[in-house]
Amino acid sequence: MLAIIGGTGFTQMQEVEILAERSPYTALGEASTAVTEARLEGQEVLFLARHGHPHKLPPHKINYRANLLALQAAGATEILAVNAVGGIDPDLEPASLVLPDQVLDYTWGRESTYFDGDFLPLDHIDFSFPYSYEMRLRLLAAARRSGIALRDGGTYAATQGPRLETAAEIKRLARDGCTLVGMTGMPEAALARELNLPYASLSLVVNPAAGLREQEITLQEMQEALDQGMHQVRNLLRSYTGSR
Ligand code: HPA
Image (cartoon, rainbow, N blue to C red; front, side, top):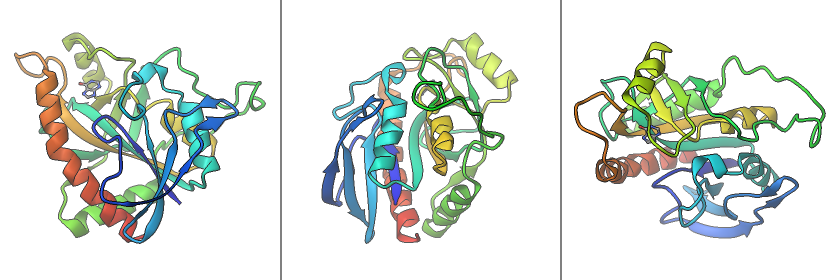
C-alpha cells in the first residue's frame, strides 16, 4: 500500500473517503500523528502528516523513526514523501515540482538509524541511489499523463533548520552540487531504505534559496507558492495512485 508523508502545507488528505485511523504508537515512540487510511482513486492509501496535525513539530523534533515504523505497521509498502523546499538552482520558479535523485545530509543530532545496536544490531545499508528508481519512473509517467511539469532529478540538501540558511550557506550548497534545500528529507529517506521501503520525494519549491536575490525570504511568499503548488501535488498524487 502506498503511504504519503505530507509536509508543510499538506497536513490532511482532502476529498477522500477516510477508512480508518491507525495508532501512532511504536516501539520507538510516538509518530507525529495517527496514520490515516483513506481511499484515493479507488486505491487504499496511508497518510501521515510529518509535522503533526495541526502543524506543530519542528524538523529536528520529528520522530522520523517512529513515523516510518507506524507506516510500516499500518501496511505501507512504498513511501511517497512530499517536501516543501527552497530552490538553489536559479531556474526553479516558486511552485515548481522536482523529483530529486540524490541527497546530501547536513542535519545533525537526529536519531537517524534503526541499526543502533539497541533497536536492531549494527548493520550497513547501500544508499548509493537514495530514491526508488521505479517510483520515480512511475511519478514521471503520471506527471506526463496529467500535464504536470515535474523536473526529473536534482540533489536535495537536508539542513537542520528551523531557521532558513544564510546566503553563504546556500553558496556552499550550490558548490556542493545541490539543487534544492529542505529540512526534512533526512534521515527519513535513509530510514525508509533501512526498512526496505521504496521511497521517493516530491519536492515543491516555495522560495528561491537565501541570497539568490537581493530581498530576504518572506513567509508570505512561501505560503503563496505552497497554496499554488499543492494543488498540482494533489493532482499528481491522484494520477499516480490511479495508475497503480
Ligand atoms: N531552506 C530550507 N528549507 C526550506 C526552504 C529553504 O529555503 N524553503 C522551504 N523549506
